[in-house]
Length: 156
Length: 106
Image 1 (cartoon, rainbow over the protein chains, first blue to last red):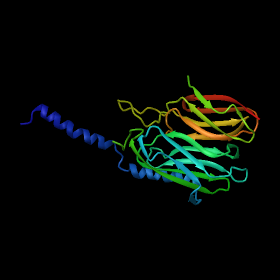
Image 2 (spheres, rainbow over the protein chains, first blue to last red):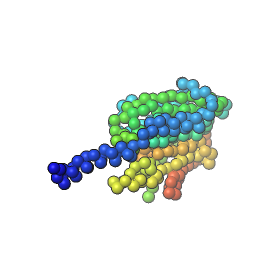
Image 3 (tube, one colour):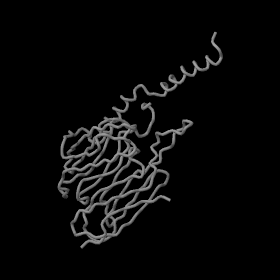
Image 4 (cartoon, chains in turn purple, blue):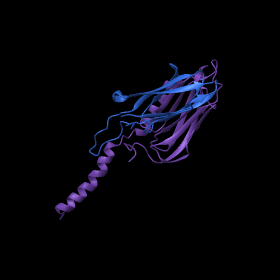
């Protein structure tokens, strides 16, 4: 016969994984991918995005995703006629795809940005530059994150 | 009280590209974290950063929760004339900090 204590131990063992599972969104990966694509589309519209001119620098292996040094530089003469209008940084697997959007002009001298970001997972980070002539250029960097930032759903 | 630190050269030659580093003291609470009893901690972040050179905007950033706590923003600008650079951070819950730094251009 099952004692009361045995029953309680068994019940807890069964209930905990079920509760953890209930919090997981089964479509998490698909939702994040859709959010990334929506953010990408919002920035570039229907214009073609070409690789090159943008250089995104991130450490390839990240111990702590809470503070990751990120820098972006774009090859541009930065004159009134030909300059970088905006730089956007997007992530695939963070809860929100947007990281930072920079708006600049010829007065910036160089199209560059250095900051520190949070990364939730091993993923590809994308930087997009919008030129004054309306063209878009991008660069991606693959990073491996061992300790994730924002420990939330989907990362249990 | 919220603090911010800005580093830039005090003097520059005309037309020189100067590097500016800014650091604001802010937790940048993402809005995705929970307390131990499972309540969501509301988002509290800096939304925008602006740098103006003698009143003309030269650099602006829209920040999102993916920016680490105490946001560091390093960028460049062209030293055109003597005057002041103003740096402004605006965020949730009425967060607003302005720093002013003088520059002498020769």
